[in-house]
Image 1 (cartoon, one colour):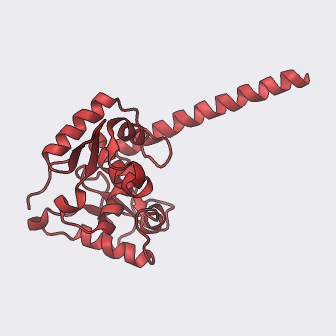
Image 2 (cartoon, one colour; image 1 turned 180 degrees about the horizontal axis):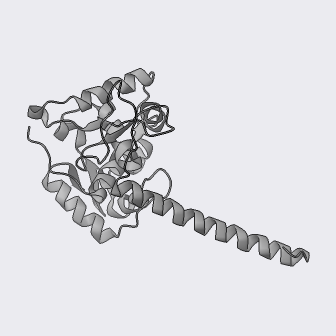
Length: 223
């Protein structure tokens, strides 16, 4: 099996959404283009938050179909889409669930992954999560190469995080046993995510301030 070329952020988001919704909303899976776009633009459980247009999602879906990662189903009323990640990458459902969360939420610890994948697969414990991650990280070149990488612990963190490699190399060094932690440079994706979080917090604070001012005005209180 040859290694897949790096996927874009929107391509990984589309695949992650299809895997997630297969388990969380089975009654409406496969997904229509509209449902898939809404899933990509969700504000909860997404890192970073994006605002993709249906036309962009359609273009990405067409590209993923060409790689057999997405399957199109022509229904009576609307075209629907499902993923084919497990078969193309030749990995079990447990590994597909782990990759989906990493694609949707960014780097996670094994403990976080166990919690985040609960609706897709219930892992017995953190050790079982780590076992599947180790398999994904140790895939030989003839099988397509590693699909995840264990990152060095960032300052102040107790556990190492894992990142998916479907979108290409991660700009953070690997964890090395016995080597003291060094400052970690943020990747472009991390910076974009931080900017998005900052903007959302600014909007929330402004909204709360406006509500407090209205309440104070109604009560005749000067803030």
